[in-house]
Image: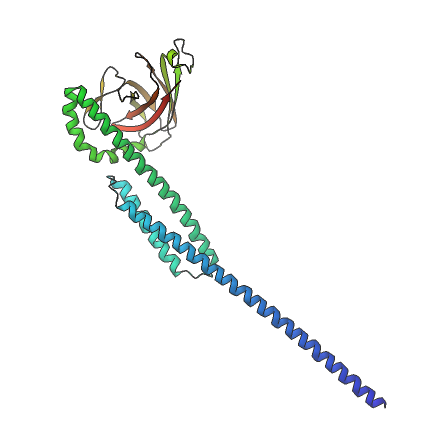
Length: 297
């Protein structure tokens, strides 16, 4: 009887051990399947992320193709655009060859995409600025040609030079007026907002720091135009684009390569009218800054 009990007890322990092992194996199998499913989902998500990033690169490449068809008329800017376009193509090819599981490389390529987009925004701003400046100067030259026969003859040369104006304006970045604040003054040189009391305009400007620019004394010329496009005439002419054109104010500055703050004034000899005015800064045969400002009641 005792042997039977022992045998029954052993069988019970064996059954318990088998059930325990089956439970452990089942748990491990469940854990393995769960982790495998999570891994598959992660890989699928990374594949989607790679596809989305590739679509963004392809869209950016198409945008660069569109800018290459524009008549930019600036060799240096055209070269920069071509370089960035090639860079996008290289990064796109690198992305295509990168495995979706390489999360670190995907993150690097996503960061590069953001950098290229910022660069492209800056190029677009330069193109728009150059085109706007070119259009405005062309219109102004037509008005000067109507008022003065001598300027009319000179403008015939300027018409052929306008094709190179974009490149000339880009070179002006060597010396650049970055800010200009306009303050209307009354007859006591106090700030005023009343149009009828304005007797003088004060222009506080800043020339950006540029250690690549040759330091020394420089002649600064300022042209101010009213809402009708009429130039506030000064006492002389200055050289620009192989010509002599009139200016409103001239000043001599000593530029050291560091940021330079200066001020010029224009006495209002005529009645002040409401509207948008423009002030242009020239130095060393370059347009180095252009700022619209508004006078209103």
